[in-house]
Structures are given as structure tokens and as C-alpha cells.
Amino acid sequence: MNKKFALFLLLNMFAFSASAQWKATTKQECTKRCVESDAGNPRKTAFDEKLRKIREKKIIEQDDDKLQGLLKEEKQEVENYKDNVEKICTSICKGNPEAR
Image (tube, rainbow, N blue to C red; front, side, top):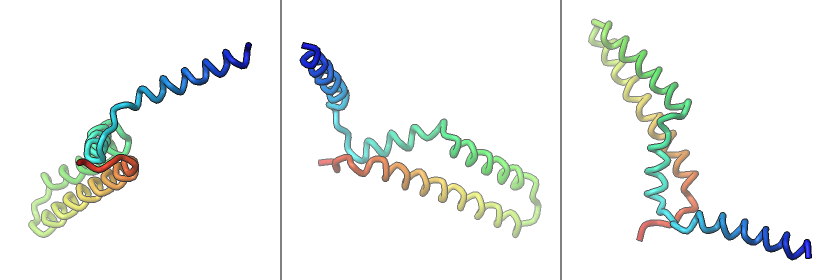
């Protein structure tokens, strides 16, 4: 009797966890949610801090050559961050189906 009860309980647990996954998402939806959820990530906080420092330097800088260098540095930081988040989210969402 105890084996039947344990089996019944186990099957109900699996059924409940499977029902939470009924709504499948596409890779695009998954990636969009992943990118949006990165806001509270420590990686995002570090990125924001780097950009803040670069922008402070841009305000102070008077030399055009150095200002151009700071603009390039800022652009490179933004591109690196976007690439990193995209790579992580693509890896997370790789098992999701393509949109039809």
C-alpha cells in the first residue's frame, strides 16, 4: 500500500511540474525575456559603472582626439556588453523552437 501511495504522489509531482511548462515559447520570445531580465544582473551593474566613468571623462575632456578615443571606447563597451548578453541568452534559449 505504501508503494502505491508513493507512486501516486510521485506521479502527481511530475504532472504538476509538467503543467507549468504547457506554454511553449519561441527562441525570439525567450531571448527577449532573457535580455530584459538582465537589468538586475551584477554584470549589468559593472557595465553601467564603466559607462558612467567614461561619460564623466567625456564631460571633462577638452582635447578632440582624446574625446574621439572616449567615444570609441564607449561604443566598444556597449557592443561588447550587447554581444555578451546575446551570446548568453542564445545559449539559454537554444532548445526553444523557431517561430513559425
